[in-house]
Length: 345
Length: 281
Image (spheres, rainbow over the protein chains, first blue to last red):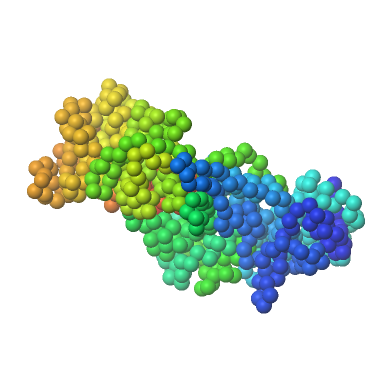
């Protein structure tokens, strides 16, 4: 199906149709703050599609902050059963960075030992993406994530009077059935192309090509800059929580007050937290903040990048927007790139 | 699903299987040996050097090395140091109790690399627990290996694990056993000194010897140096690493060392794999 254009007034119709079939979530402006959060849509007319990336990424629907894995009843013979839940869900208005973030989680949760809970959430999920207006923290242009190649059912790009609609799946095509659409004109295509080019230009801020990062970092483990940037860090783990590609978790047991049943749950954890690598005997294998900062950067721009072929960073800037001391991955990377170039010359 | 991920999920990935605690054998004031059998009679099906996640409902889960040899299946043993919530609760269990087990996980010791070779095992403290299955395996298949040397060091004599077995090994020609304690003690007439002080007495053939080293983190760098001094190649120095392993299946991220997950890629590594990883040793 060729690219289509829909008018702005079609968006509420599309939403209403989706809401009849599934829970629909979209970005909502948080009262009193210039911040956005995904929340359930109650009124199709309330959805705004021009927004700065939400505080928490869409990963919270595929990998909830707290999630039951196992339910048990204590008896003479304890009964344990898997808790795997799924519901039809539409994420409406996901930015390309969020869509890339879900791609990253797909790889991690679905390689060896496929995660049943994650796949259940994902299998019920449909995604209508939308292009964004970046702010000064975005750097998706540098990460190759300014536009999604896959991972959406529909993707909307703002053009004059409405949206250019890219159809990613058959389910996406079905969403448009019977709605007023028209084939995209050359002018609409040109507008969308120009908008993307402008966005990429604005968000290309890392001073090396993204695919050179793993090799570039390989010689920088001993750089003093890890320590310099880490002196500011509070080890609060906020960057982990808001990151669309972070997926570390802790597993804990929770008993009911009646003490006769309980659950095994996982909750988001973060490699920046001091306890993260500590073992029961007290040994901590990443005791220093700089060790943890370096680990986080290597995981994003080297280890998982090399393993799965794309950076484990979608350039969304959430980590720096929420960081209390403004540790900016672009600054850290650019400092490291300068050092690598200095060492070479 | 608007994703590339359409693979078959294992619904039971995080669900433990129930095992019966059949026998308890106290070892030291801190460690106790627990013998289990799955309630459904199925074998654990492990290799020497693997671990399980032990789950006590309402308390939590902990990764524990398997202490028994595969040939003893469907009985398997865990030797547990009382150090945290789960391990303390394990110490308080009575025979007949049911616990949850997930696993076995990890790669285990590379039997193909040891087969037909001289084996030198270096165990410090509770490092003896994960190598015990290997010791049993070698003793049961003694003609498949060349010389067999076992160094076992502990801080104090009362910390000795598997005392009866150690006495049997001492009396046996099948293994050349060297024991040491860190500091002099009135109840000890043997060698005194940290485990590296046993190395001057050894004369391994570097071409044939494979060293298997398990102990507290501090021990590794010194024992590796001693092995290198004996001209052992880095790929013939085999180590088992301890890390915080929450999920055991390569997801939760806690056990990561550089680009490796200890629960999937380890816990057993050769030194040649680890020497360029700054977080490993």
